[in-house]
Length: 235
Image (cartoon, rainbow, N blue to C red; front, side, top):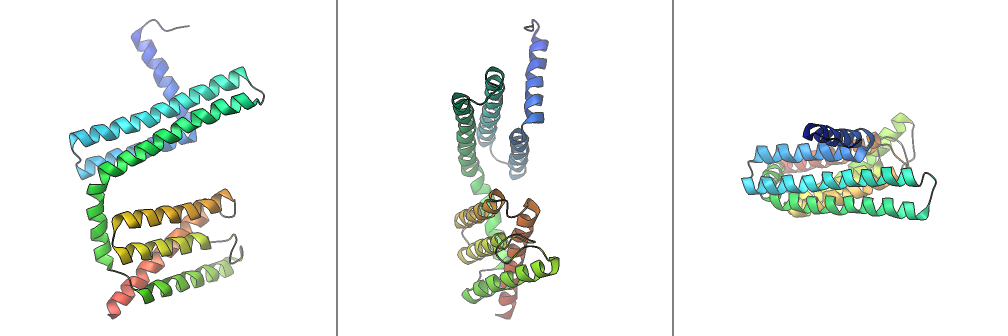
């Protein structure tokens, strides 16, 4: 029955949000990302206007995810069996969420970049710029470390499976070297995005688990930073 009181309408709305958060993993991820962004905004002391823009962008993504869930439920109710038009409806609704998320990411970058980039430059300065020899040595050591760990665990081959993910390790080693050599926050961000895409492809192909990919990324980053600090001390 349609609620007649305002408080009943609010309760229905909250139940819808809770249902979406309970059944849709993407909604839970959106909530976690929103919490992280808003906490970072408070920590960085962004201006009220910038905070308003971030909150508005986040609300837009959550709204799109709620609408997407509602469309999926209605489509499943009307067409419980597979139908090509039902697939189109779900795909279009999911596309709306993707567009909203992309726009929010751009908004977040434009607002937070000027606060985060100085901190990132300070972190780069602490490690120091890399060198050509250090970059080559880092990649070689990462490959050796991956092979040794795979040999010790007895899982996977040098190019497929096992602990850690070799592709993730090398990708993040290169991304770290690019970041340290250029000392440019934007170039560093783009390099890390490429490394994440390489790592994500290993998950999509089901060659590695998330734990193996994360371990590989940490291995590549740690070895590269360590080699850079070592070469810095020798200079």
